[in-house]
Image (cartoon, rainbow, N blue to C red; front, side):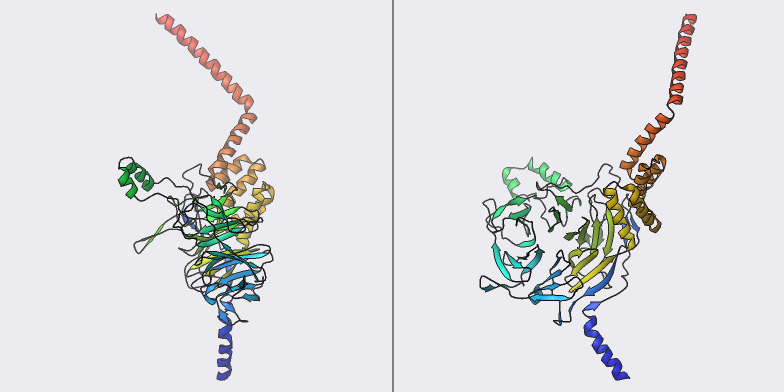
Length: 489
């Protein structure tokens, strides 16, 4: 009997190191109230599996750097520690292992590569260490190498180190390069630099104002010795199905606009509302709203990767706390999941996030793993309701908002959604109450204006009569006062 147990354990160990399935993690989810207070929230994404390698190759991942999916759900894993690119199908069955592909008769290595991007017919891989971009066919055959050809505007001492890339339908490549403060580097299909695209603006802060003050006082020699104020570099870039570019920035001066959606002119068009300074969510401040101080260090949200799904929901990966933040197109925070830890669903050093359908994949560079997350009904209802709200179909959205509210009465999105449905149904007073509870001041003002107009219309005769009576009373009082004044004289 003991021999049977030992054999069973020995057979189980190599399999369990590759795939782990569990019901969930111990990480407690939360969201933020409109005043910026963290409040408990139901689970939004549950970890369903963790992959460390595969049985076919008997190799674990080693220092994996990036993951991506294609339109068929195939998952591409860049595994530089093993000098290979691995392709899995939608059920995480290994399809192929690509090692040392040849381009122009020369074998290439993945050991210095940092990211990949998959198009309809190609795989683009950025080689940070060698300053190159490799283009492979979807089956892994080498096609060409793109060598960076700078414009005259590039500093002579600039070293091209591509970190993240995107490629549009015309073959135009946007590169987030290490140490590039002028925005994304735009390349044509041959690698010739077209120009810079959408640099971060310098935000007004105390340090910037102080620098400007001293520059007005110092001599030119003193100014030259001062530290220059330059834009913050991007930390990642991706593209949605409509061709819009999304970027993340690790940290900004005011801890705002760390996530951007850029139009062709390089302008940020991601929706947000900063009408009321007291409202702390949806106003362009992303990630955790409070800075953590630990061991004398200031720990703020540090976004290192971003993914946009087929319904345009945004997933931004914070490596400082190991969390994934999900937003809609109006910067509303939908969910926060993950964390730093050892249990399933938490990470040591998350490095990349992507997804397919409802699934979300998170790569951990230290644990050498990929964790698969599946949505709960709670977050499914939020997403369905938000999509219907975006189409102004509030009457259909209300059934989903009601389910969200039953699960979480603190959800301001649900309260605001119920308010919109009530407003559309002509229940203005009810809508005002929902907007007040949600602290949705913008919609409350709209509802209040409608309520005031409605009240005036319904009581116009009475209001007019009261006004007339008051006018007559004022006239009589004035006449009486004049007569009394004359008698006194």
